[in-house]
Length: 123
Image 1: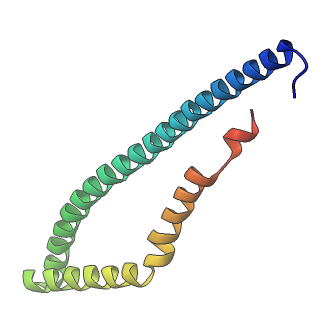
Image 2 (image 1 turned 180 degrees about the vertical axis):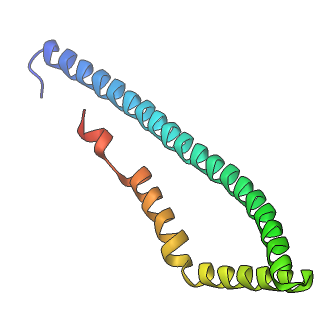
């Protein structure tokens, strides 16, 4: 099939280059995955910290509002009841809008992160 040894040498070099290319592509995929997982974990950590701080702030603000309403209504129990009702209403609204407020932004973020090939187009 091959007339001389030069063709076999060229084929051997081509095989070595293809093998080297596949190894480099594997390393690139690993680095890309590590980069995306780092972005994902740092975003989740940031959201977690913000939720904790926001919860603490809402806790103290709700107690402040209870005492403001208690002085306005004349009853501490009424202040707690009003704030409790507002929090239940807020929880219900968030539950009803969970698709738009929580799921859709999360899906969009993950799709942009893992499916966007803009980094591959620059090569």
